[in-house]
Image (cartoon, rainbow, N blue to C red; front, side, top):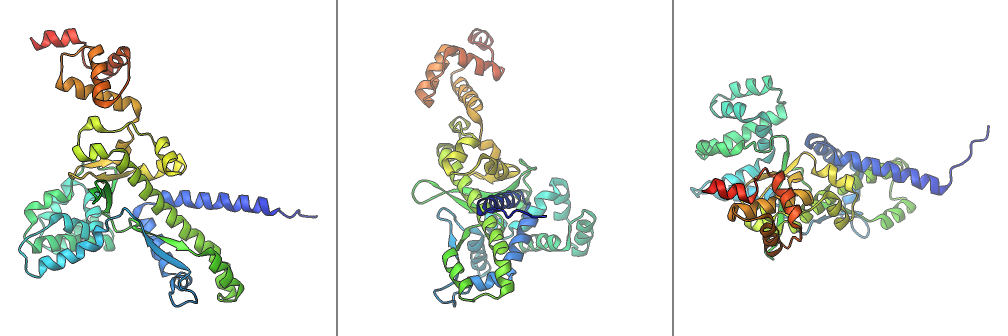
Length: 367
């Protein structure tokens, strides 16, 4: 039986589908699985060879930091050293950033269990409780280190801030902070947040394979390893682009904190603006949250209100300031304040959606 050989075009198409599926899986990995992937790739002997700056012409894989990333996690340890060197102040925000993984564990436990832990002084008792709650040894150690560090500085009274659960189902990943140019930068709050990407020199790698720099076994493993590196890059690039896109689209809201200033952004709009597929945006946004510049935690999905929700928020903002306006006057105010051109009938529709009575009833109730 003759088995037909696949054409190069068919093989390339199948390889492309495999890479897309691999990237999609990487986007959906939870924190623990993604950290394990990073650890395995960076501990790989072949990957360390690619990073070796002593190769002819330099390393074949280089690290390049994202432009709008403020690496608070690295700066936090230096700040703590200055505090321990003699200053009497205690920066809780820096402590949370420095022990971000311990904070993740504490948040996952919930408010009641967290408060119970804070009242325990015996480490053995803490360990028994954490084991009973299904917390592994590694995570238990991270949490114990956080609690011990805070207690050393006598800040146990401030630990209510450690377990805020306004968005309990989401994983807090970063904070929007004002940048030097008037915009906003991204400050990571968890250690597995990618602040840099790997730049792969494919041309030089091909030449190195041709000149025999790699053994036969390494050459066979190379495509799979580079595929994992590209998947890691894709996750980091996509999350960074999405957060930057959200910060740019909602800059006015992030400056003032008014709900009416949230722009009518959709995931499709953002995907088109950053040049990625809408499914990638959906996978990144799901289950993740960020901190606003004033410290409020918001789910990333809340930054995609859609046109209807945005218009309803604008109508609510107008009527909260001028409660006796008619629907026609509301439409006029929306045009003047927010640049929204909607009809009187549409303004009435949004008002009804907010369960706000008409102007006559509002005037009667105000008397």
